[in-house]
Picture 1 (cartoon, each protein chain N blue to C red):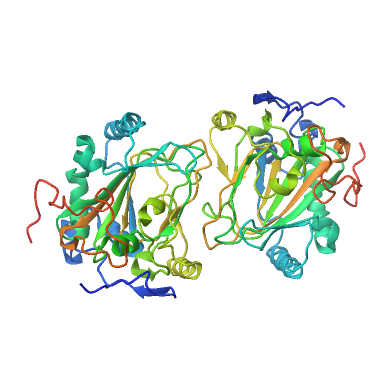
Picture 2 (cartoon, each protein chain N blue to C red):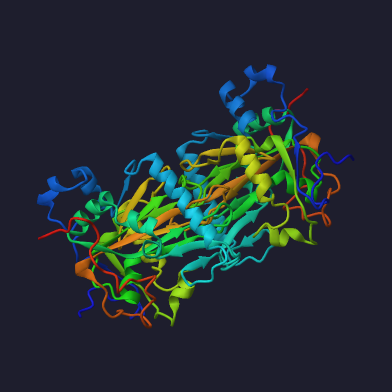
Length: 303
Length: 303
């Protein structure tokens, strides 16, 4: 298969134009979307969108309870699916929660979310990756700038930009407690990064990403193009959708306020994984789903 | 001399009440102040105050130019007064600029600044410490929570809380480029920290502070008391005044935007340094002034 987005194979970084639509349903069908025209415009232009109040307060409270029950019940479990803090043993992320837990399976298949995702990706979708992120007060570490797509393409063999991330905030996100920072418009460009993927890179990269990180000049160029940076703040329950290729990062959390979220990546069923384009072997199923790719949702899209 | 604020001598952290006024001129003289009553109230209550437009755009542009000329002319200078980035050789701070450079000496003695400082400290003042901080894009490191007074008291022998810091922003401070975070109201309490001061602690602590850092429980308590955290954003030229004991920190700067400032600490002439209260010897003159403590300003206060 042709590599539309080569990375980690050259010794010089390179910025190329995106070769896929951002919204995969034709814009003349805007009136059928579960989002307003303004929301669609914002997402297409900036590569992200925040939605408040999609879930009720009761639903948000239930999710907040559920993530801690899952953290508690897994505190002594040794599993690759649990990522722990580099400097402590605290669980930082639990992967594949949509597969291992019925409660989170239902959330991933919530029809309100799927309506949005189906429209943006213009097809049926499945969950490529899911996880709960626990970013506790005082000890949440920073995460360097990266495009998720760059990793999914090189390490997982995701062919095209036809996926998106959905982060459901499960604590209040302030400007000061390590919120998601996004480069508006960065999804329109692809930064081909330098360096080869090390063997079993994911074991390190889930803690501190080193390969697939854009060089400073490219990042500055992207920020200049986008006219600044955006910070995804919002009360618990706020949903942040960001396009697979939108450049993002987060600083450490030095405050007493935790920053927890439920994170799901949806991929189009027409964009299933193939051989990694620059990886060192396939990553495990809990990070990059290859088996359970049946379309989600009660009503499948027929086109 | 009695130690009003013991720290680094117990094995348990302790929170005690402040034993000094915040505004050292009697509040019945508010009408004589170069600040409004609202500004004075805000400073007294929160322990910090931001002032915009005190300097003209032209003055700010001149300062911005001057700090880079000084950085440039010192790039190859080996001096204790230049603090460089832990992971690179870039100059991060230059100390004692009010003593070594006539231009910055004049700024430190700017009568508009002195009028404010004289009023808040209720006496003549001198510069206890000055520095330019260069926090370049991408590489500025985080600075952990601390009260400056805790360090000045234990390591420098500053007897009482009758000093303040003045930070003049020389680049735009956004929420995302590692701005100063402050705990409102924290100046009303003193966190007695655990651990003894290591020999020559300042050589390490100017890069990464480890001793004199409050424990997480005390910090959470302070934040709860203050009802949250404040972030000192503002365009270049904005002045942030914060009381010597106000708890503050800053995250790393992962953005392309630099965060530079000119930083001056003013101390009351009635609060000159004595023997360090829990130090391991006196720190150098460029960090803690003992010699040049003549009152600043054309018109001295007579009271």
